[in-house]
Image 1 (cartoon, helix red, strand yellow):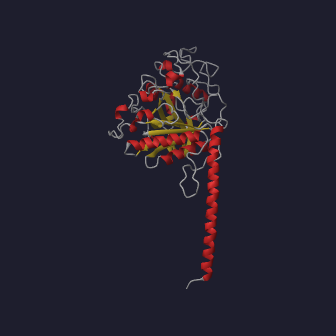
Image 2 (cartoon, helix red, strand yellow):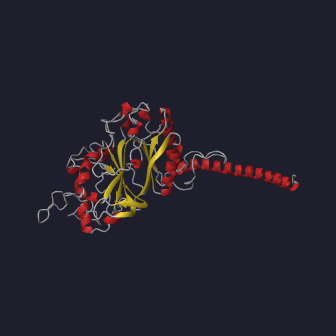
Image 3 (tube, one colour):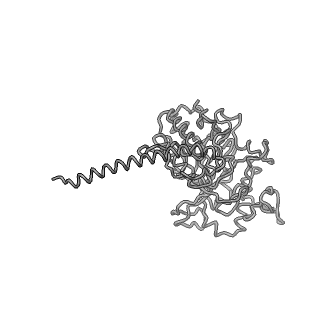
Length: 437
């Protein structure tokens, strides 16, 4: 038996619901239109809000003054067709250009039914110097022996499969990958939101393989940040303002010669670089129990000033010939600074852009005495090195350090990747366009 009261209530509710939906849709459309119009205003005001240029000769996020936070994502391609990869790169480029200018990844929909191209998690936040850096891994060219996209012949010789280094304990789930995307910003929410939009755009074409967030701390501009071991990290880095010079074993090369691929590289990669990425876990509990003198001998620098042992100022040159009164090297033979120095590696140099990380504590074991096991901090360094050729850059330097560096008793490389980083993007292009031409 039907109930007149119930029918009347439902009819009235339906009328009110319809009116509410219409009203809400109207509000959404108005708000969306206002937001989309505001996108244009924000684009004009982006520079004043702290935006880094997206378009240029080189990709942003390399020579850019280092931001305080990063979100790195490594993807495996699932697309079967080359045009699907191109469509993804075009979508990523368009969204990255918008977000770097302080806009949403795409224009917001005018009603709540449509799927939004942006989660709105960063709506109202300034761009916070957001940059994107894209890289192409070996798997884009050949995967499991298969040339999936007709690019095998265009794989650069320098895009090698990294050798297994002594002491590596690489986690397969944090190693390799076909595409890399790094978002850097001075706001962690801006960086993470940006990467979430990249992952959403990749749905159906690529899937996440591994990710890593990182931070540097709010260090004063122009100063060298400290890592979680308490030492300054990157003192000997070539500076983007360094004059161009060829250099030698004794005279460091300029930034351009260290980082940017020149005429000797593939045409599609000229103006780009190569990135080697390593996730390095540091046994901080063990490290923090050691004496400062021992730490300084391990690193080869004074902890608080950052100066080389035997010197007073951070940027004083490493005097690898200096000896104490007993004839022993002032900078120990197995110290990190000595083994990493260009003079110890036939002039080999890299540009490091590292971030610290602190992931949830987990069950771990130390590599060296006292071989402590238990729930430890999963913390360390997201090491990213840019160079013109990893064979004469990172590999040349690290193959010796992996065997002899005194710092190895506290560090373990647990993740790894290598990527060719295309040149910068011109308006109307997509990242890596020359490769697919």
